[in-house]
Image (cartoon, rainbow, N blue to C red; front, side, top):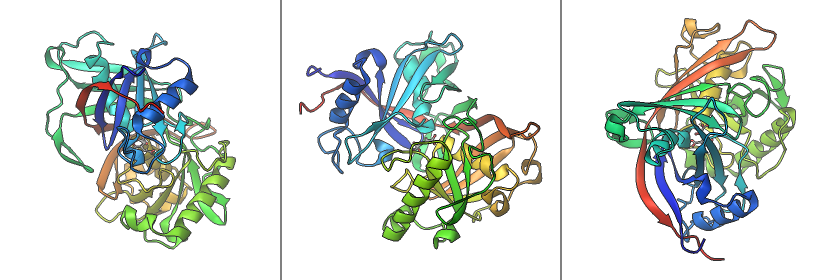
Length: 362
Ligand code: NQM
């Protein structure tokens, strides 16, 4: 491995990560994770000796392979490489890095060259959910330049439409993992919900903050960090997830009324650093959560009436620290337990660098 490993650096949505072909990494997961820590430069807050960016949103890895499942084109395994701990986690999906997976599959010829529009079916190995990425690739070459502006990313780029199937209960088995629209956790009322990203929704006001602060301001409050951890660990148990302080899920999401014409305002934790925007599946999960009657978010949200319940998949605008994220979520409320049938969002991605990465040797 000292000769270097083929790697593409891409921005996927509002995140950035290293994309690898599975065949270019060790098959053994412990060996692979040890190598990824050396490649990204962890553990070190600055990741100075690696290619990670010193923040959870820029310390991400996508491992892509031809799909082992005949109904999908490629398999995408997401790995979160912790910045200041020697931990690599496969316990969550990442919809932002997902935005780069279709383009990467075309670049690495894992799918036949598209004539004009590419449509890549992606199995998200972390949870078994499926995403379809549609994007322009005229003459078989991925089109990165385009007109779509995305809050949290300067400039514009070509749109990538992501459509999700089977995200409800991705890691927990049910859209409402506890079976309840509200639970009492560590002395506060929350909604536990999982439409691709297991999340704990609660009122920002219940933790003594407005919910519109800058991420840095929220991160600077030690009491808040302690409460977020307590809530995360207690909710994890209720949701059937390991109550592990180093686990990246469930995410804790503080909700407050929308300020800029959206449905709801959010501040989500990654789980310790506060997100500069919101994740894709994070937004799909908040969108599902606020539309379900009886949840914490339902009462706080400004929902267009067609969106308040039922199956309408209209767009919901989720406000976040750098602007807003539009997501559509289709729910089925007719069965004994509610479920989400499909979710969709638009993202952009960009190839930043393609070459060989040299991991540190120790
Ligand atoms: O929710 C960060 C991100 C994410 C996750 C995180 C994501 C998603 O913004 O789909 O994309 O929540 O850890 O990259």
